[in-house]
Length: 109
Image (cartoon, rainbow, N blue to C red; front, top):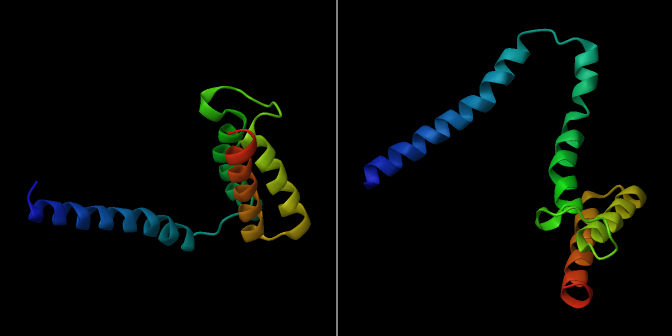
């Protein structure tokens, strides 16, 4: 691949990425969305994050594991408690990752 081809490809990908984000914004700004739809869209981020995180927590390495030996499950439990008590995203991520790293390095690793 030549430098010119790579440059054109990168620019084209940037334009496509921009349009994918712009078109829904433009479309939905011109129509009235029903209240029930707006209210239900509040739950989309948590549903997407749950769909991404839960399989990684309960199926590390592709095998179902909800035992006390699952470091990811224990770290997720700590993160849930920190999130519930502090309502702070940074502390939640930091606590969960610290517990995961400590468990993997010293106890379960």
